[in-house]
Image (cartoon, rainbow, N blue to C red; front, side, top):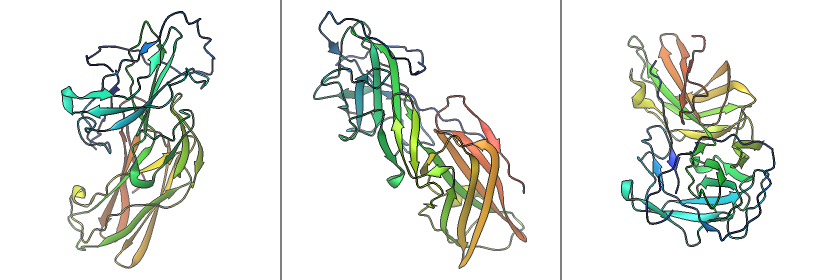
Length: 313
């Protein structure tokens, strides 16, 4: 079983020049950072953007498209605002590739008081609180977040690693060479008590809460008129879902073969996670229909888990 590794790396910095910076990843805690006394004028937060090649992300290009917008805020670890004008400023990409720059009508400003630079994608003017961003699987939006600590006037560069807030689900159908049928498949859907449709994202800490619509049907749009031995020819587009990271993989895959309804229960001893893609392989065999494999791919290659799980055949 081939395991795909996907790395999404978003480096952020502004100005008319490229600013090289390297930040160790910071662990967000509940400790309140007491800022130093401000003694000098604030300076603009410096942002540049590059994204590593993506192959399994909903953003399939090697970088953000021209005219893409993200929100950027400065704040303290307890969620307190950094200051007036530093909340959810809209930064928009201009150009593509290595010539791409990010511009804002009003720069985020940093002072001598150390804080966190926090970013979220996509931009919404309604996101006034980066600790409580509403997320929804409608339209399969690829919500991303990132934060960097210890940003101040003397260190105004922020290199943010953007992480995926959602989980991705895909289904692939195939048949063995000795299976004589040529089935049509429709009304494909998955449900799980560990997958929801709506939630609240804390972009500062990278956590999800208040998950809604758990166990609701998550529907795929595809209809397949036939199947082959090659699962790549009958693969759904990825849909997103809000994962309850405290629950193990326990889901039901349902679909119609012709007019007949079919359901398969999938229960495995591994928890759902943010930033993972779960690919369900369904195989038609003489006399039976089985889930031959459930693969877990890193949407972001952060080393939390890599591998695959194998249900009983």
